[in-house]
Length: 209
Image (tube, rainbow, N blue to C red):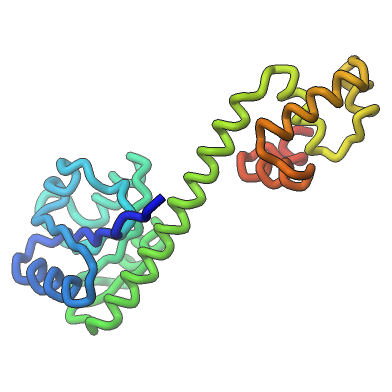
């Protein structure tokens, strides 16, 4: 599947700053979309794309920190780079503790900003890829029948077929049939593959004991 081009979203109430950042990003081949307020960005419905958000801290009505909180509550994990001409240590600490990727004071070096943006985009790519992997694993698990799921939970603990049969009060032959079907449906080549997928889905051996 072809990867879509990342987008850098800019939210700043200062038009000159928005235009300057747009020109900078375009000069290095990055796509940019700017917004004059946090409310405008929220109304756009954007944020699930691969990219990052360059966000001013102090803005009328909804501040940058308040927007960060709103996005977190909405489950939007777009990496945020804060920029501010009036930043304080407590402000930056609050932003970073809430998950911001970086906090730059105006006037900042353009290369410092670009470096932060590239890091944020790579972080977003990895996070999106992990989310897609988890979604696919979930889909595979949902194809298992209730009995197959029971066997699956035992297989990933490392139990041999005989012990699984005893534990589930069924025939060893039945366990073997279910096990083969599980391996096929999950697209697993080994028990180690099953364990890895279960761990990604939060169903590792420690979680089910």
